[in-house]
Every structure is written in structure tokens, then in C-alpha cells.
Image (cartoon, rainbow over all chains, first blue to last red; front, top):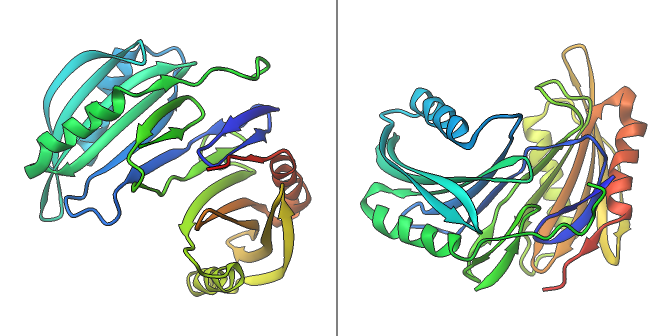
Length: 144
Length: 140
């Protein structure tokens, strides 16, 4: 049994269970379809670079008109992170997204900011603001 | 701005942002898992919890044929007063079971849903109770 933290509470989680949580945050309603997602994947021995490459490959196969616009390295919460900027089509809308992935305690944690492509600069700026405030949660339960 | 808490990280978000996160916990890797517990959030505003839950169950019964509501009742979750419902419905080759617990939290409803096949219902309930019996809510 380990403690699991969500924004509203902390609760015990049975040992050996897997976390597939997805955080969905943003203004509601959002005229520019802006939102921030936080997703997780088990590291399972993969490197950050390999994971991000496989993520991009997966997106390119799933998203209509997916195009990678750029990739760079940065530091988030004192940890190495990789950022990928891309565009894709969602129905009639040209969309933009920026994904920033880092490794935290054996998990890949990916922040995805998405919006209409016409406001991509504002989308990236808001993500940068958020990422500048990211801190790693201190481990309270050493048994986890 | 306020601090948003996840299991791994903390970060600051504007006060007006909404949280439509879905926490999904599965007892095994892969697609066919014996047990899962999902935590979702819905806006409640000034509405009462009971009509909200009735509305949710009605909504589910529209999309799930032959849904059977086994029971509903009030319950406490930590210091908060909530409602719980147990439902089941037939699927190909068996019957699914779900135990839902609804808790009002600062104008929202947190919904804890544990699911399994009906023959594993007692264990499914036990996992959910384990989680809820140790829950500590964050004060805003």
C-alpha cells in the first residue's frame, strides 16, 4: 500500500497497481481550445530520447496532417526535459501542441499544451509560465 | 494562481482554470484488467448531490442497456457526506459490476468508481473501501 496524491486528496493505493491518470486543465470554456494535459508512462528501461521519439512516431501515425515543427532540450524542476512542437488537424481546425517530457521516479511525465494553431505563441508562452513553477513532490512515504 | 498537486509534481495554475482530470488505476498491465478504480470530477455548483447522482445514473442507463441499479444510499467519506450506488449490467459472456461513490468537494463532485466482473464484486468493494477509508481531503 502506498499513498497517492491528487489535487483534492491523498489516499492509499493498493500495492502493484498501475497509474494511467490524465490531468486535463484549462480555462472553461476556451475560445482558442487551449488546454494543458499531464500524462504518464512507465519508464521500463527506456531513455527519455527513445520515449519522445516513439511518442512522436505514434502521433504521426494517429493524428491527421501531423507535422513536427521542432524539438529542443530544456530543464524543468531541475531535471532534463525534451520539448516537441507540432501541428495537426482536428476536423476543420489547424491545431498546435507543445509536449515537454521529463522523467520523475521511473515515470515519463508529459505536459502537453494544445490550442488552435493561430494562437500557438500564446499557448507556448502559457506552458513556459507553468513549467517555470514545476517542483518535484517530496516523497513522504519512503515505502512506495 | 494556486498550486496544483499531482502525485509526481506540483505547479501553479490560474485560479479560474477548471480541472477535468481522470485518475485511472488498474490492478494489472494490459487491456483486460480484473479491477480498476477511476476518479473523475464534475461541476456541482449550488446544486444538491442527490439529484446530481440521480441524473448521472439516468444518463448511464440511457447508454447501458439493461442496467440494474442494485442500491443507493448516503455514506461518509472521511469527514465528507456523500452518496454511493452499486450497479450491474450484462456484457457478452458475463455481468459487469460497478461501485460508485459521489463526494461533494468545493462546488464539484468527486466520483470514485470501482469496476470488475460481478463475481469479483466483494473484492472490488474491498479495494474501493481500502482507498476511501484512508482518504485525506485537501482544504482549499
